[in-house]
Amino acid sequence: MSSRKITAIFLSSLAMLVLQTAMAVGADETKKAAPAEAVAAKVNGVAISRVEVERAAKAIASQNPAMPEDAKELEKKAVDQLVTAEVLYQAGKKIEIKDLDKLVSEQIVKARERFPNPEDYKKALDSFGMTEKELETIARKDIVINKLLEKELTPTVKVTDEDLKKFYDENKEKFKTGEMVKASHILVGVDEKATAEEKTKSKEKAEAILKRVKGGEDFAEVAMKESTCPSGKQGGDLGSFGKGQMVPPFEKVAFSLKPGEISDVVETQFGYHIIKLTEKREAGYMKIEDVKERLQEYLMNQKRSKAFGDFLEKLKKEAKIEIL
Image 1 (cartoon, one colour):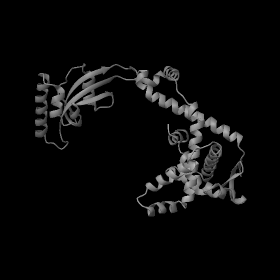
Image 2: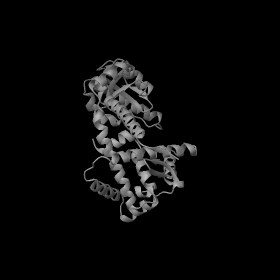
Image 3: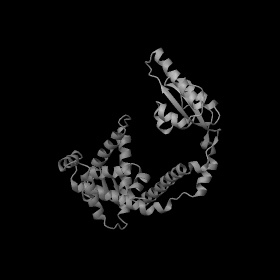
Image 4: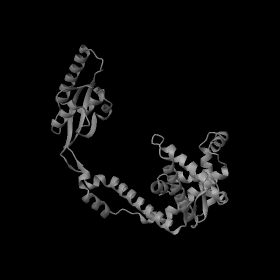
């Protein structure tokens, strides 16, 4: 798993937060030189300035413009996020990262390549009040935190078959399914502005098609030639569906058929349908094999979140954090 993927999974928006942090002030030396009266917090003596907090708060607010927050609450969130980023970065600096400078350079190249020309790249930096040197700091912090998480957390997070079965057995109601059917259809479409005469002609065409398929012609082949529904390209196959997924007249007939049975002509607002039921499944429970992949991802995300929370709590306990 790539380090960037790990950051996305463990931290959600923290990678962006690190960018915001670096955008606000830049290199560590600048942070240490911040005047005491401008300092909002310190992590092991490294200052987080009021400027950083204000800019981070604006960034947080911009993520949810429709949900304005109290200024004090925004400031509290900004301080907490900036402290988290600094704690992780300081921990990450303690591990050896091979070719870090090269990795930083590659990130900068990628950043430049996102813009059509050097002028647009410079404008983007200027819009954030940044220099390329500050962008390098951003890239360095991003890489360091990624590498830290890759080293410390990835080996600890695993989901076993026993974990999957335990969750499935304890939450079986979550995997309950209603009655399902699988069907194909042939549609003779009718425009909503069609005249009575046009509707009659369409219905007569559908009746003629019905005679053909009930007379032995291959349903899928006829659907490919005659159906006006996009599903006609797949021989009319609509796949599986449960109740409430189709318009009522169609659903009522589909669920009343037996596998292999072909309906009479069914009228809906879309036109005239001929339905063939191919499979019916009674209400029951999804098999664990059918949900294994999704379940594994869900449990992995839970374990990753807990592992990250525990790791961050440990780092914060070991750090000297001052909120000023």
